[in-house]
Image (cartoon, rainbow, N blue to C red):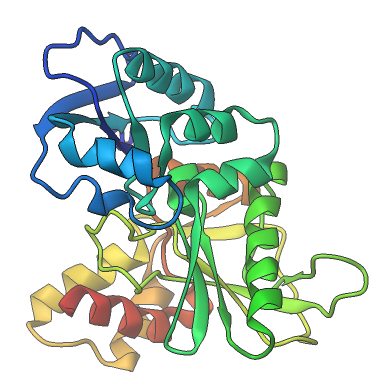
Length: 302
């Protein structure tokens, strides 16, 4: 059975150190003193100047670590933040995206029945290296989205956000090689799952569930089988152990041999998705094992 994973971390300034807090069985918390940078942590245009002024002088914050994600555990996290608000909380920042709001607005967005509001509360879309990539979807135990800047930036951001919200609203079983389009008028784009290398492993913003890379418009999907091969142990772990054993980078032939000889369980796609979420990370795509291993090991060295 997989060890429990901390899936959401909230930074909540304004709660005094002596506050009596009962936040629930799945939520742990600790108090930290203001290091003089609390206001800077919220300087992204999402809170008003008067809130920033209060954040600058508040004595400290509660850091909340939750074993539930922000979708399935939404009610538990709302209840925890309501208790923190009643104890004096000023604002809430989700460490998985570094996006913060004043406490009333955070509760309004996360309490909404609309997945668009959940997305707005938790996810940002960043640009760099000729691409857009969202950040924060791992708070929902889901991959982020990455799109090359091959057209109008605003339209591409809307496309990325639409795919994210589709994941939140429908919880589909997406698979590499399938296609996505936001409506009947838009061209299809192929989706491929890749490791997230924008942030290194261990960073709060690193998405262990990877990213959906959207290909250029008009891409043709490829057939996917009815069952999903799931490596046990994970192929990435096998390759890491082999590389440590060899004491040098694996060759392409060694990576492909390890893939071909690896122990697999053929699973229903939904069951494979549940297993991925329970262990807290995505494995390499077998068809892209060599390319993705190079990317993954490069991120580990960075």
